[in-house]
Image 1 (cartoon, rainbow, N blue to C red):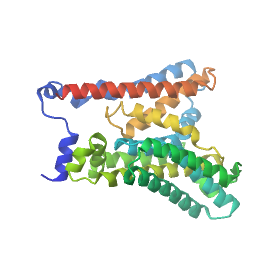
Image 2: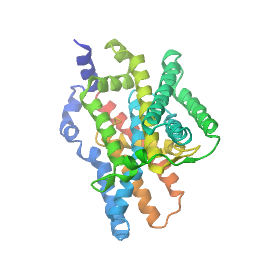
Image 3: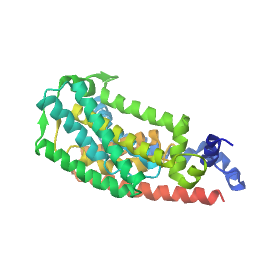
Amino acid sequence: MSSDQQIRDETSLPDTPAVRKRGGLLNGKSLEALALPIAWVAVIVLFGILRPDTFLTTANMSSILASQAVLVVVTLALVVVLTCGDYDLSVASVVGLSGMLVAILNVNMGVPIGFAILLALAAGLLVGVINGLFVVLLGIDSLIVTLGMSTFVSGVVLWISESNTISGISPNLVNPVIIWRLLGVPFEFWYAMVIALGVWYVFRYMPLGRRLLVVGRNPDVARLSGIRVGAVRWGALIVSSLVAAFGGVLYVGTSGAAGPTSGLELLLPAFAAAFLGATTINPGRFNAWGTVIAVYFLVTGITGLQLLGAQSFVQNLFYGAALIAAVSFSQVVRRRRAAGAQ
């Protein structure tokens, strides 16, 4: 049996009476898979009724879609590494590092924006390589390594920026990110959708996606299937940091500036959206479109509450509660499936 066939066997449901009995439900996954999209539509309808003059405007919808593009990208970066069973707490700091490098190189040093972006992406890649070095080669828990890396990178950003905000980013970046529009929505939203499409394609159609899943579920089975577990984990950490660095480019292109703490506020929302996204579309698995829906469900609720007069602290309450609820729901789904497979 080939290793790819073994992977397909591992990622598929076993042929047991319990599974066959539930076959109709599992094939449709109707209620469970569509619960969050339905809830999102319900939230839109609710706030549309309560605030029709402000919430349902084209400007507000365009703002919601574009304003969360960076968060979508950062969450997708997390999804890659979470799928193979690791954590990356450094993604938010990589956003700040990437954005600050673009600002320093382009504004302070006069480096062309294209070259500045390439160097910022290379910095993100380097962070991922170092994370993988400690996690894979030295066997240190990814939670500890990436937490330490997050603190280290944040210190580097404070150092190179001298704790100053740098503005005046070239229009050659700002225009393609926030000024140019397609269907009335800034390009940054479409860049995020391209990343989501790429992650979905890899997870859905490529052997690499199945390998990531098997490594995350059972590294021992992955090794017996001939998968180079260390290489897969290391690669996931590298991709996570690289995608986060791209998020930093979008961040600085959106605001036209980079601050010493830029991007750090994205960590909790990204984890909340990643785990919430794992409860929909393909419940029990981190997935690209579930992630996108989760991000926009959360921001729609927050925006609606703020339009109703809620204070700014509602954002932290919403994201924190969503993270707890999503993780709890994921555990329930996992236990139900494990029980049903017996």
